[in-house]
Length: 402
Image 1 (cartoon, rainbow, N blue to C red):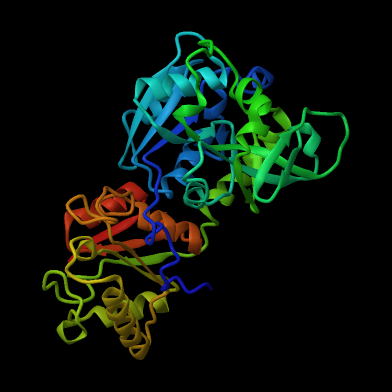
Image 2 (cartoon, rainbow, N blue to C red):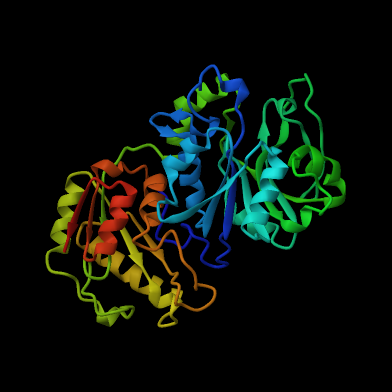
């Protein structure tokens, strides 16, 4: 099992380069799926009990965006009624098309409507396993960046030619069946890509990306993981068999989620010195019983003291390693620890809202994906309403308040 006690778990702590806005194209007609989806828009196709778009947004949420903008048109009410104005604590906004605008027109309308300078833009009918934060970091000084993925039949999508980390060309689809890199439909886009003379309705791919790719010379990130689009009945059927598990993880293990201060150790307000650590009476007994029942032990802790400059990341890691060592000695080793150093009243680079800060469920959902945790069979112990609310939003089956 990977050691999640390192700072490698999300969010991107060192650069804090989370997308302020994520724009999702969810307004397509889905003509090729009409025979199997007569009563809903394509992004709302059922994937083992969860709409495709919800699975996509659950994955996007772990990139810690400030807001999600859904571009909607065909049967838009189905999408709006499902998501409302909030998804797992992240604001959801809508760019409504009175008539289909094409992918480019939909993106430009969202940029104009919400005064965006740049955004992470996704197709709402495809999924690729990729590190969104890494994409933003790699092309932060470029007006355009995109994700490419290797597939066995590249000519179904149109092959990408690349060199030295840049895309040279995007070829037309062809009847041949050969492997290669293709556009995965995930972009970092800046407003400067849209000149004033563009029509109201246009295709981003056909009218901007493909004809201008040589002059734009965009950077790309290669996704090594899973890729699927649900544009045809055959690929939708495949997604219904495997996509949910690919995104959420396989629900194998129950877990005991523990807040740190007030549950593991006495809350003395921003504890970070080892000499100030005082373990709560009975906590080791609780954890030994959980281990004996086959539960993973996962700590989820807000660490606003980092954002406020009260202590450093190194101080936090030193204290964390001491606590984990004590649990090892007590025969109830901690399997993983997730922490959030962000706070709206903190200092740069940690001054912002975060999907990972409780009462948002980000840390719990990241743990569930990483460790294949069955949330409905799991328990959270916390000492504040914020802890319990995070558990409720994540779908944890049982919760207790110390």
